[in-house]
Image (cartoon, rainbow, N blue to C red; front, side, top):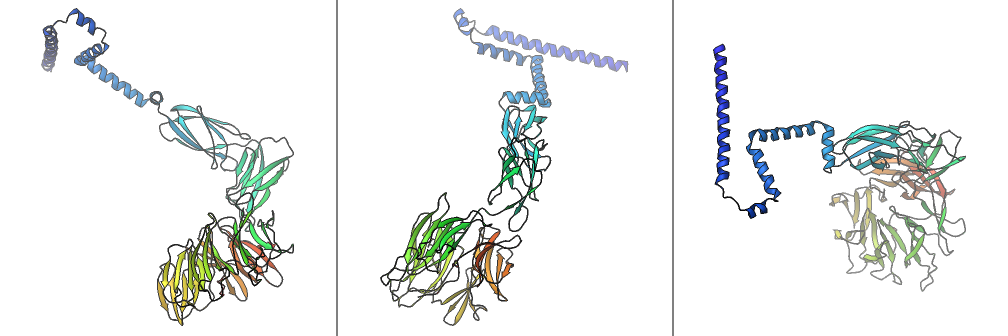
Amino acid sequence: MQDQNDEDKINLEDDIEDIELQENNELLDDQDSLSSEPIESKDNIEDNTPNSGNKITRLIKDLWRNPKKRWGIIIGSAVIVMVVAILPQSRYFVLNNVGVRSSASIKVLDSSTGQPLKNVSVKIGSVESKTGQEGVAKLDNLKLGNTKLIIHKRAFAESTSDITIGWGSNPLGEQNVKPVGLQYTFDIKDYLSGKPIEKAEAVSGEYSAFSDENGKAVLTIDQPGEDTIKITINADGRRSEEINQQTESKEAQEILMVPARKHIFVSKRSGKYDVYKVDLDGKNEELLLSGTGYETDDISLVPNADKDMTALVSTRENTRNKDGFLLSTLTLIDATGDTVSTEPITKSEKIQVIGWSGDQLVYVKIADGASASTPGRHRLITYNSDTGQSKEIAQSNYFNDLLMIGDDIYYAPSSAFEGSKKGFFKVNSKGEDQRVLFDNEVWNIIRTDYDTLMFSVDKDWYEYDLTSGKVLASNGPPVSQITRVYIDGPEKKKSLWIDQRDGKGTLLTYDTNSKEDKVIKTQSGLTYPILWLSDKVAIYRISTDQESADYAISLDGGEAKKIRDVTKTSGIDRWYYYR
């Protein structure tokens, strides 16, 4: 064993001698190389002396040729990189100095209700932001590393915590803050259905609170200096409610909210046919257009489902033809701005509004001064309420039938005169993309359900599928030859229509997804016109010997409530056949 150790020692000494000999040979080679180079003149030496680049280059070469120095540099650099990578503070120091910045987000909640808080000050390091509607604050341009998170809002205890900002988005999750001010509770519900309203907001100055799924909102306010506090309750699509809250009162208040959109109607309470608008609960009634005293009782009022515009057909202008017959005027009532404006669009012996499609108002009128034997006496026209431009879609001596479904118009002109255009036609509300669905004269068009039309040609009946656009022969007329009038909701997901059942009017909704009907209300005298005030609220008319009134009902349940007594007016209804 001893002999083996002695032999290993001798081999190691031999290896060391070989390495030293090799390094000495390399050093001699370098000296020989330098001695073989020509000696520069004094001038050249002086010129090269200030060149620091050459010195640095020679220094680097010298370091790299020396194995001990070379490996020392490599190992030292590796150690530095490892230290920076392993130690967070070292890493953050380096990244911050090269300009790397990060971001963070946080959601602030009221610890007493679990609801998000708005306008809360959130500060991380030197960067500050405020929470929005969902209680979320986003902060950018943050330095990396350990820092302070400070959350501050009046009437709530300030929260301070230590956090570490890393590379990336840094979602900090939810942070609860404790209320320390006075708290006021509100139970916020829908006026019609009585169901709670979630995400309603109670606001008083800089203070705010959102309602939960039960409609409960708890507003925390710093110590007030007055006996009453003005509080506003807001909710999407609803009228704002103003409350004078007694500072000493701690009882929860019930708040009933109605749609922000107003109902428009005609009343003769003044002795003239005036046009009003009013909130669903009968508040804030406003006169839109005073009657002139020249109106006859065949008034038509058709609101636009998408905006506060209404088409009124009346004889209010007291304009007459050569025979002294009062002419009807189509008037546009625009309540979309701060002030109400009215504009007479056209006059005629007879005007029937077919419907609205966005900005397009579609109607039929009898041409001015045209006799009953005029081939183009009846004109189908579309009017753009935004541009004020009218376009004639079709004309005929009269139309056998006509209806509007969604954005499309279906019409059947008569062939009373030889050479007249006849058939069953479809065109969009802008008067474009006209198509011939059937090339013979069609006498009746009946909508038998939401997706089906049936039409007659002499004694034959055909079926038209609104979805596929196919025409099929039918083995006979429909069971009921009363066309259904569907009124689509704002999002086209549901549609209203009325059926007569057991001597009473029955209001139904048709679901376009499930293809099913649902009864909403059954009542004597329930009739058209019907319309949507919002995606959840329907308006219908009760017309009996005892009353003529408009009622509102929620699709979410609850009892119908009377809005106002009104004058009988027509709206979107079946095509009135006239020559």
